[in-house]
Amino acid sequence: MNENQLIYVPLNFIMFLVGLAVGFFLELNIAPFTFGIHPAVDAVVLTFGVFVLSIVFYGYLNPVIFLYIGLLHSGLVSGNPIGVVMLLLPLLVASYGGGMTAGYLAVDLHEEGNLFEHKIQIAAFFFGALFLALVIGLLYGFLPNLEELDSLIFYD
Image (cartoon, rainbow, N blue to C red; front, side, top):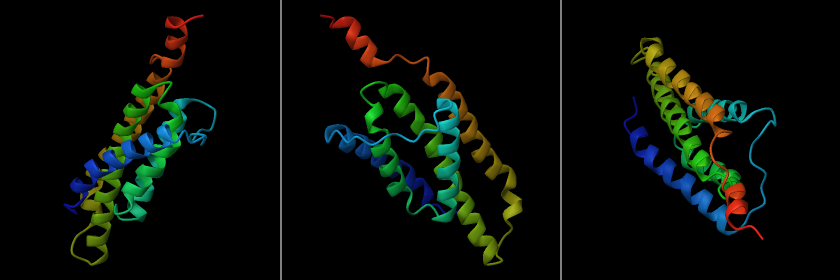
């Protein structure tokens, strides 16, 4: 396992928040990633993509991926900041699991170990991240929308 993956988790969190802040304060008008079916589907697909990209890039480009995801979701901060930050949890688990899987793949490639010795650990991170994304996506519609709350409080 690559011990550097633990260093990237806080960096990914910081880059996601930087992306949110930059996009929010510059008022970027970028549509967030969505299929338009349900927020749970969007969260699961995004988590799967982060896991795969973490494997492909060996976890080193994860901060750039999280910066981009933060920029994409910056438009949702004014409406539902709790849901946007909660979406970060499965993405962090997926990025750590993907980077860990890439480390195990590299060890297997150099014939110093076997990837399948760690299949339960890899599957636990992968399916755990997908389950978290599914639960958070299902709860996303029940979280309070601050734009509606603002219209209730500051009515004309």
